[in-house]
Image 1 (cartoon, rainbow, N blue to C red):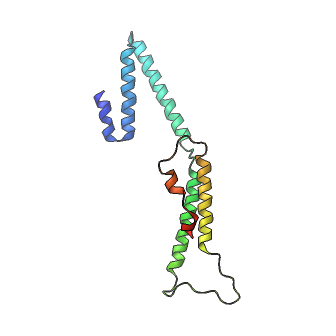
Image 2: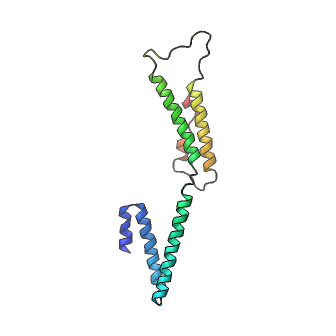
Length: 149
């Protein structure tokens, strides 16, 4: 039991495995096997259960529910990086004005606001069906519109 508890010092995964093995050990003490065949049967069932859990974990691992939200947030950072690169190319006097008769580009703030709103909507729809709340849910996505402008 103590060795299973010390497994936590190697990280969360070995610690979790130590807890599972300690529970298995306690249950095996409560239900002693009558003979070697019964003990082998229980060990075999334990291994089959472990293989089944491993199969489920490996097959369900590719399901990443927050991927769309992460991609939407990545688009925000990409747009911000593009604007920072553009600002880096400006001369020291500031941005060049548009020639006469040419409409200026849409301000980058409107594009960023649109991307942030898309990311917020995507994250809200992703979190909609999940139980509980994230620790920083309000602090991360409640930016007033006046601050972005």
